[in-house]
Image (cartoon, rainbow, N blue to C red):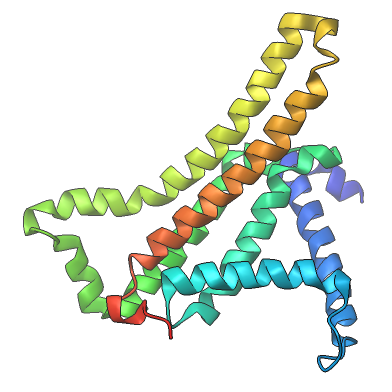
Length: 221
């Protein structure tokens, strides 16, 4: 416990979020095991089924035939980024307000995208993509490809941090007069904007991954 408090704030909040989520889903796993699939679905299970079905449908529409490989990754990404974005509601420091965290998320997404390109197009097809539409575009394509994780990381970091900065500016500008409006501002920036940034980050990650999949593999039947 002492080690946890001596850690940097971003790492501590991340570990707490991951630990709580792991514990929750382990418990959920044992509850789901007790459900009889031949009987009526319990009401408590419906929201979880809806979320999984929504994610599966989105991945099928973008990735196609190999959606089962990618759906768990995108669902995990969605859950973590969502709780990281709204962690201020639980009196935790916001992990996605630190570049080290958003950078790690951007880098992991970048790896998924590149591995998808290699496995789907083959090494030759993957490398040939850097020469499209003309070989002269090689430097620009390389820059565009390797700037992707930086773009994803900075977008998530900037949008979350800007909300915090606005809240702080309003607080210092109005002083005690800001007290009545701060709960509404926190709800907007911590929850509403947090949810929007989850959608933006995951949808962009899904689209960029889809761009590395062969067209014939995108058709799901």
